[in-house]
Length: 465
Image 1 (tube, rainbow, N blue to C red):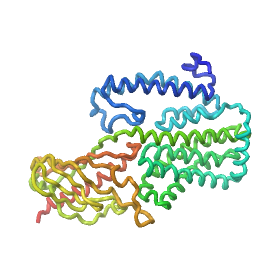
Image 2: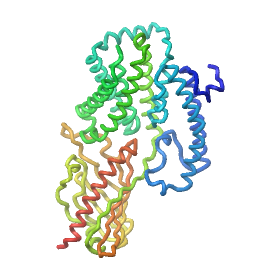
Image 3: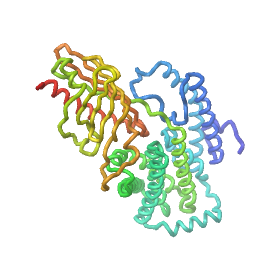
């Protein structure tokens, strides 16, 4: 595998899978080493492979420390030559395979670009290679097992893929304790990609039908999660939008592979790709387990204006009577909601208990600045929800320990009109990835919890007995 200068800079010509993998893997390892040295020695920041998908905490850019902005700028500068070389190699590899060059956009998609890299590293060149006896035997078996009809091949594709999905999900959730990128991004990609690959085994299918098959695979996988009591209805529903989008992307890649002209003569290249994606998925799940990133500390703030003085509001913040039954639809799904708050003692060191429908938060008071600020930590918390399921009791691991409340506070600000602005804040960590996606759900739920409490405090304060 001779190397030439053009291998690193030229966008023209072709490159084989061996050279593509060798150069790509070497450059990735080199870049990771450089980034780690820059992060740890230059800026005193931790760095792992998962930081390429997780950088910093969510928030406004104006809140980012200047040192971190310099760090990100340094990383971007270092990355530019690697990006150029990566794009050049990827374009030449696509040309060698005979795939559309627009697929180079996959180079920029976080996490999925690793699967794409391994795909390009396994699929042979456009010229059909001789079929070895083992591959010929495998092809003969698959020819018999996979129906030639569109409906039959779709059914086999979906069923086979979902069977793998059940096993991999069980491994991730119960074996590795992971609700990460591999489960919510890698697995849906595998679902859509593999189901379409089998669907188009005998002959190319249309893009519309391929996308339909990829969506059906997600739907059946979701139903299987419920049927085998692996997950409940609400968590499956939350994961479904992300899973559907990623599965359709996987189905699109599968469509590109199955429509290649050489597929009519040799089916085995597509199953090289299947093996690469499966191995990559398992390796990345184990990598997440070994090098697990610390979730960002997120903050959710909700406020309400109350027609009462801070002194009147304060007593209803420290502890409040039982709230009426929830009318919000989200709290009728099993998600925990607040019922009442009680406190033992006064001042710093007092212990507040906020009772939810699934148990109580234990909140030792850290700041007691009456009637301005009540701040507390969290030393214990109940399950985040009671899963909806056809079965009497489903308790997946994520119900406890994956959404962790760290601290909270109530800030009371007097307004010129004699009213009080009451702001409630919760700081928490969400151990689900991608954190940006799951943060949308958790932020919304916590905001609704805040709103329920603040509205109750407002009613008590404006209508004292």
